[in-house]
Amino acid sequence: MPVSPNAIIWKTLLGACSIHGNIEMAELVKARLAEMDPDNSGDHVLLSNVYAVAGKWKDVSSIRRTMTEHSMKKTPGWSMIEIDKVIYGFVAGEKPNEVTEEAHEKLREIMLRLRTEAGYAPQLRSVLHDIEEEEKEDSVSKHSEKLAAAFGIAKLPKGRILRIVKNLRVCGDCHTVMKLISKVYQVEIIVRDRSRFHSFKDGFCSCRDYW
Ligand code: ZN
Ligand code: ZN
Image (cartoon, rainbow, N blue to C red; front, side, top):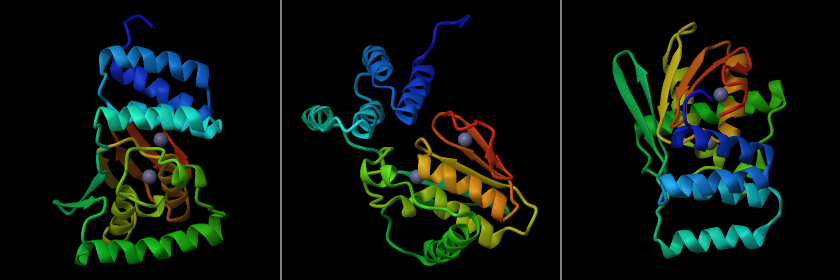
Protein backbone atom coordinates (compact mmCIF):
# COMPACT_ATOMS: atom_id res chain seq x y z
CA MET A 1 0.00 0.00 0.00
CA PRO A 2 1.22 3.52 -0.78
CA VAL A 3 -0.02 4.80 2.61
CA SER A 4 0.35 3.17 5.99
CA PRO A 5 -2.82 1.31 7.00
CA ASN A 6 -5.07 2.77 9.68
CA ALA A 7 -7.23 0.86 12.17
CA ILE A 8 -10.15 0.60 9.70
CA ILE A 9 -7.94 -1.14 7.12
CA TRP A 10 -6.63 -3.58 9.75
CA LYS A 11 -10.19 -4.25 10.93
CA THR A 12 -11.27 -5.00 7.37
CA LEU A 13 -8.43 -7.49 7.08
CA LEU A 14 -9.41 -9.02 10.42
CA GLY A 15 -12.98 -9.34 9.15
CA ALA A 16 -11.71 -11.14 6.04
CA CYS A 17 -9.64 -13.50 8.25
CA SER A 18 -12.82 -14.27 10.17
CA ILE A 19 -14.67 -15.08 6.93
CA HIS A 20 -11.83 -17.22 5.58
CA GLY A 21 -10.82 -18.81 8.89
CA ASN A 22 -7.19 -17.65 8.64
CA ILE A 23 -6.02 -17.87 12.26
CA GLU A 24 -2.37 -17.07 11.68
CA MET A 25 -3.06 -13.80 9.91
CA ALA A 26 -5.90 -12.93 12.31
CA GLU A 27 -3.52 -13.12 15.27
CA LEU A 28 -0.98 -10.86 13.54
CA VAL A 29 -3.66 -8.33 12.65
CA LYS A 30 -5.17 -8.43 16.12
CA ALA A 31 -1.74 -7.68 17.62
CA ARG A 32 -1.44 -4.58 15.44
CA LEU A 33 -4.95 -3.47 16.35
CA ALA A 34 -4.25 -3.99 20.06
CA GLU A 35 -1.55 -1.32 19.78
CA MET A 36 -3.82 1.10 17.97
CA ASP A 37 -7.18 0.57 19.65
CA PRO A 38 -6.80 -1.78 22.67
CA ASP A 39 -10.32 -1.60 24.07
CA ASN A 40 -12.31 -2.27 20.95
CA SER A 41 -14.67 -5.12 21.78
CA GLY A 42 -15.46 -5.70 18.10
CA ASP A 43 -11.87 -6.79 17.35
CA HIS A 44 -11.95 -9.27 20.21
CA VAL A 45 -15.24 -10.67 18.99
CA LEU A 46 -13.90 -11.05 15.44
CA LEU A 47 -10.80 -12.89 16.64
CA SER A 48 -12.86 -15.13 18.89
CA ASN A 49 -15.00 -15.98 15.85
CA VAL A 50 -11.91 -17.03 13.91
CA TYR A 51 -11.08 -19.41 16.77
CA ALA A 52 -14.67 -20.62 17.06
CA VAL A 53 -14.86 -21.51 13.39
CA ALA A 54 -11.62 -23.50 13.77
CA GLY A 55 -13.02 -25.25 16.87
CA LYS A 56 -10.38 -23.69 19.19
CA TRP A 57 -12.71 -23.31 22.13
CA LYS A 58 -9.94 -22.72 24.68
CA ASP A 59 -8.82 -19.65 22.77
CA VAL A 60 -12.43 -18.51 22.45
CA SER A 61 -12.96 -18.63 26.19
CA SER A 62 -9.64 -16.93 26.94
CA ILE A 63 -10.68 -13.97 24.76
CA ARG A 64 -14.08 -13.88 26.42
CA ARG A 65 -12.33 -13.84 29.80
CA THR A 66 -10.13 -10.90 28.76
CA MET A 67 -13.24 -9.05 27.66
CA THR A 68 -14.96 -9.67 31.00
CA GLU A 69 -11.86 -8.71 32.99
CA HIS A 70 -11.56 -5.43 31.12
CA SER A 71 -15.35 -5.10 31.36
CA MET A 72 -15.72 -4.52 27.67
CA LYS A 73 -19.33 -4.21 26.73
CA LYS A 74 -20.68 -5.32 23.43
CA THR A 75 -22.47 -2.58 21.54
CA PRO A 76 -26.14 -3.19 20.82
CA GLY A 77 -26.84 -3.15 17.12
CA TRP A 78 -29.13 -0.59 15.51
CA SER A 79 -30.16 0.26 11.96
CA MET A 80 -31.96 3.16 10.37
CA ILE A 81 -33.89 3.45 7.15
CA GLU A 82 -35.22 6.59 5.50
CA ILE A 83 -38.72 6.45 4.06
CA ASP A 84 -40.19 9.62 2.55
CA LYS A 85 -38.02 11.92 4.63
CA VAL A 86 -38.80 10.08 7.87
CA ILE A 87 -36.04 8.09 9.60
CA TYR A 88 -37.10 4.84 11.23
CA GLY A 89 -34.75 3.25 13.73
CA PHE A 90 -34.53 -0.39 14.81
CA VAL A 91 -32.59 -1.22 17.96
CA ALA A 92 -31.57 -4.65 19.16
CA GLY A 93 -33.76 -5.92 21.98
CA GLU A 94 -36.14 -2.97 22.04
CA LYS A 95 -39.74 -3.26 23.22
CA PRO A 96 -42.18 -4.02 20.41
CA ASN A 97 -44.08 -1.06 18.94
CA GLU A 98 -46.28 -0.51 15.90
CA VAL A 99 -43.32 -0.06 13.55
CA THR A 100 -41.28 -3.01 14.78
CA GLU A 101 -44.33 -5.27 14.73
CA GLU A 102 -45.02 -4.39 11.13
CA ALA A 103 -41.35 -4.99 10.30
CA HIS A 104 -41.31 -8.37 12.06
CA GLU A 105 -44.45 -9.46 10.25
CA LYS A 106 -43.05 -8.47 6.85
CA LEU A 107 -39.73 -10.10 7.69
CA ARG A 108 -41.43 -13.44 8.41
CA GLU A 109 -43.06 -13.29 4.99
CA ILE A 110 -39.76 -12.35 3.30
CA MET A 111 -37.80 -15.14 5.00
CA LEU A 112 -40.41 -17.67 3.92
CA ARG A 113 -40.09 -16.49 0.33
CA LEU A 114 -36.30 -16.59 0.49
CA ARG A 115 -36.45 -20.16 1.81
CA THR A 116 -38.84 -21.41 -0.82
CA GLU A 117 -37.69 -19.38 -3.82
CA ALA A 118 -33.98 -18.90 -3.22
CA GLY A 119 -33.03 -21.90 -1.05
CA TYR A 120 -32.02 -19.72 1.91
CA ALA A 121 -30.84 -21.45 5.09
CA PRO A 122 -29.72 -19.43 8.14
CA GLN A 123 -25.98 -19.44 8.76
CA LEU A 124 -25.64 -21.29 12.02
CA ARG A 125 -22.13 -19.97 12.48
CA SER A 126 -23.53 -16.50 12.90
CA VAL A 127 -26.10 -17.79 15.37
CA LEU A 128 -23.76 -19.83 17.53
CA HIS A 129 -20.77 -17.58 17.82
CA ASP A 130 -22.21 -14.12 17.44
CA ILE A 131 -20.18 -13.17 14.41
CA GLU A 132 -20.66 -9.54 15.35
CA GLU A 133 -21.15 -7.69 18.60
CA GLU A 134 -24.89 -7.92 18.87
CA GLU A 135 -25.33 -9.30 22.33
CA LYS A 136 -29.00 -8.57 22.74
CA GLU A 137 -30.03 -9.96 19.42
CA ASP A 138 -30.34 -13.60 20.42
CA SER A 139 -30.81 -14.83 16.91
CA VAL A 140 -29.58 -13.59 13.54
CA SER A 141 -33.17 -13.54 12.33
CA LYS A 142 -33.74 -10.46 14.50
CA HIS A 143 -30.74 -8.36 13.45
CA SER A 144 -31.82 -4.77 13.05
CA GLU A 145 -30.78 -4.39 9.39
CA LYS A 146 -33.10 -7.24 8.44
CA LEU A 147 -35.98 -5.46 10.18
CA ALA A 148 -35.09 -2.17 8.50
CA ALA A 149 -35.00 -3.84 5.09
CA ALA A 150 -38.31 -5.61 5.72
CA PHE A 151 -39.90 -2.32 6.75
CA GLY A 152 -38.55 -0.70 3.60
CA ILE A 153 -39.98 -3.48 1.42
CA ALA A 154 -43.36 -3.02 3.12
CA LYS A 155 -43.42 0.78 2.83
CA LEU A 156 -41.52 1.86 -0.26
CA PRO A 157 -43.03 1.63 -3.74
CA LYS A 158 -41.38 -0.80 -6.16
CA GLY A 159 -38.29 0.52 -7.88
CA ARG A 160 -37.14 2.70 -4.97
CA ILE A 161 -33.72 2.11 -3.43
CA LEU A 162 -33.62 0.95 0.20
CA ARG A 163 -31.07 3.05 2.09
CA ILE A 164 -30.01 1.62 5.42
CA VAL A 165 -27.39 2.68 7.97
CA LYS A 166 -26.07 0.15 10.47
CA ASN A 167 -23.77 0.95 13.42
CA LEU A 168 -21.88 -2.38 13.40
CA ARG A 169 -20.46 -4.60 10.69
CA VAL A 170 -23.15 -6.48 8.79
CA CYS A 171 -22.91 -10.17 9.76
CA GLY A 172 -22.54 -12.96 7.22
CA ASP A 173 -26.15 -14.04 7.51
CA CYS A 174 -27.59 -10.53 7.04
CA HIS A 175 -25.27 -10.05 4.07
CA THR A 176 -26.63 -13.20 2.43
CA VAL A 177 -30.21 -12.20 3.18
CA MET A 178 -29.70 -8.74 1.64
CA LYS A 179 -28.30 -10.31 -1.53
CA LEU A 180 -31.27 -12.68 -1.78
CA ILE A 181 -33.83 -9.94 -1.10
CA SER A 182 -32.28 -7.81 -3.86
CA LYS A 183 -32.75 -10.72 -6.26
CA VAL A 184 -36.15 -12.11 -5.22
CA TYR A 185 -37.76 -8.67 -4.75
CA GLN A 186 -35.84 -7.01 -7.59
CA VAL A 187 -34.84 -4.11 -5.36
CA GLU A 188 -31.57 -2.26 -4.85
CA ILE A 189 -30.41 -2.03 -1.23
CA ILE A 190 -27.60 0.21 -0.03
CA VAL A 191 -26.28 -0.48 3.45
CA ARG A 192 -23.67 1.70 5.12
CA ASP A 193 -22.23 -0.38 7.93
CA ARG A 194 -19.33 0.38 10.26
CA SER A 195 -16.71 -0.55 7.73
CA ARG A 196 -18.07 0.33 4.28
CA PHE A 197 -20.92 0.75 1.81
CA HIS A 198 -22.65 -2.33 0.42
CA SER A 199 -24.73 -2.02 -2.71
CA PHE A 200 -26.92 -5.09 -3.16
CA LYS A 201 -28.38 -5.67 -6.59
CA ASP A 202 -29.63 -8.72 -8.43
CA GLY A 203 -28.25 -11.14 -5.86
CA PHE A 204 -24.76 -9.61 -5.65
CA CYS A 205 -23.01 -7.08 -3.43
CA SER A 206 -20.55 -4.44 -4.55
CA CYS A 207 -18.09 -5.56 -1.83
CA ARG A 208 -17.83 -8.97 -3.51
CA ASP A 209 -18.20 -10.52 -0.07
CA TYR A 210 -15.14 -8.77 1.40
CA TRP A 211 -15.96 -6.47 4.27
ZN1 ZN B 1 -26.78 -9.81 11.12
ZN1 ZN C 1 -21.27 -6.39 0.85
